[in-house]
Image: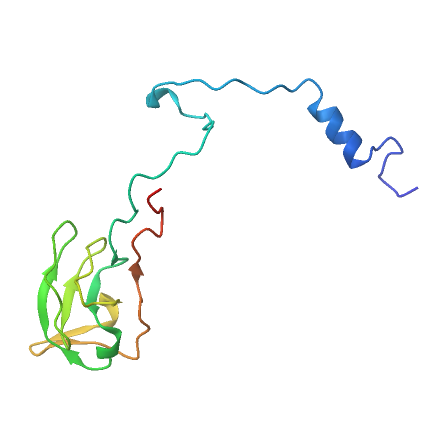
Length: 144
């Protein structure tokens, strides 16, 4: 006999059957959302929209094309969260804030702590991987 192990142990099937004895399924019911805390959905609830609804910045920084990294880029716009950006021209960057929609043409964000602003623009370190610090549309939940 192994030390610390009782001779009265059951195999998995027997133990599971003993646990489930007397357990019955509960009928589902419709309740107000405010009363749903601590409950479990009876069926799948499909997402009505993508979350996030558009590609957006995961941090405060500079939106740009990854291919343009490694040089000084003119800052052509400021994109706070909740505002629609203008398309981004090649060879330019946009000052962007967490949660703001990425301008069309941008594919990456560089965090503000590694960028130096000068009178000519933002000095963007490189190389940069496409998609850096970007939360993709629908990554949290896809519609449906």
